[in-house]
Image 1 (cartoon, rainbow, N blue to C red):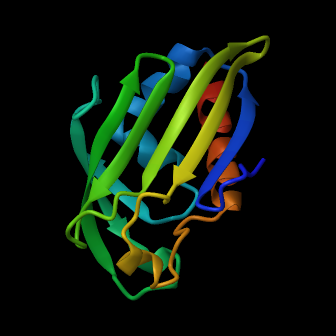
Image 2 (cartoon, rainbow, N blue to C red; image 1 turned 90 degrees about the vertical axis):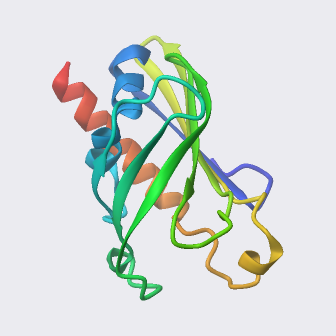
Length: 159
């Protein structure tokens, strides 16, 4: 489902795993790489996050999207919101400075099948100079859906 704002995508999927299981994967830097549907996330370094302001590094390859010739680069993932087993949100800081301030996140709710996972991508806070470049959204809504599919496969097989 697309929200009414044109600068935010939000998609949902029922996943047959507990919120704690899903959340543990989302807190693990390697988990982000494992479920990425874009092909941009190559590897990650850092400890699992435990609170807002925690960070980890992701090694990226923008060539996977074939849109902007950025090649390989690193970003620092900065956790902006954190509620154990319920919400994790982040932004990135990397090659482009100051940071663009687009947000990614997951909300988790217990459900009859395990967890209702809501994935969102919000670029409503980016500066006008980035908006004018016409590169947002970086990830399409279908990319969020695909990542949820990989997330489901990953945690359901592990359980």
